[in-house]
Length: 191
Image (cartoon, rainbow, N blue to C red):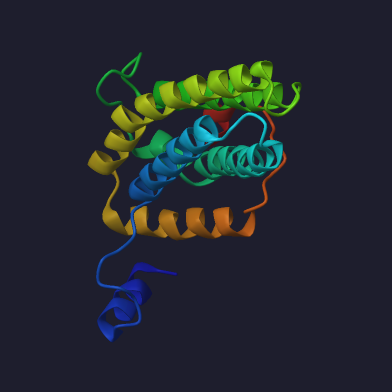
């Protein structure tokens, strides 16, 4: 859809007055991830059915969220970003490489949870490690990539990406096949 068509839709009232923003959708997902980890912490270890159900939802959500970011957020961050706040090398490429590496670590941490009986101390420890990996990643992403994108991408693009991001997550609500990616190859392919 070209820019003129989008503006015509806005004028005709077929689109909400307030556009969506992919950075806000990502922040909303982060809040939901934190909520689900917190729920797991509050379930009795003997309630294996509840733990299994919440973990199944959370692990699928983590994989889908990472894949959606890698498809719809990071390629444009590489093109438009300039690096923000405490990015290691001060570039969007560096922010992206770090994020892809974090996603790989998170995929591995999620996979490690599956090696333990649900509700066991080892299972809770593995879930805790996944929570730490995810929390560190989200903090960096919120200070770096999301800030960088808000500063350098216009709202029309952020809206268009938000629509694609939301549709992808909705289409894959039960999960995606988690696949680690080489951070440098990813940046080269999208830069």
